[in-house]
Length: 87
Image (cartoon, rainbow, N blue to C red):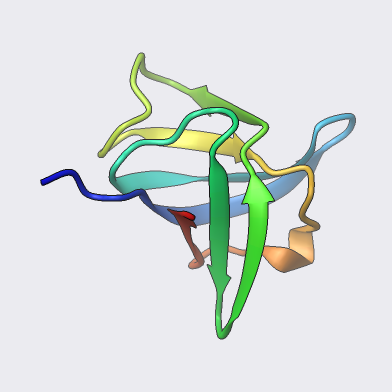
């Protein structure tokens, strides 16, 4: 059975010209540029499209530390402790 994406956000910042970036650890599944995502921010959910994935390894799958570009969101829409899943 293939598990869906579960990404734990550890930090959030803004990069000029690229927008909001959420860094963290992929707990399960994988993520790619163009994926439709949902940020679970407390009791609120925000939809976003992944505009880019930056990674320190050759993989963007479970166990990887990555940064996701989410230009549709502001820093107040996502914070450390939030979870990001695929829609």
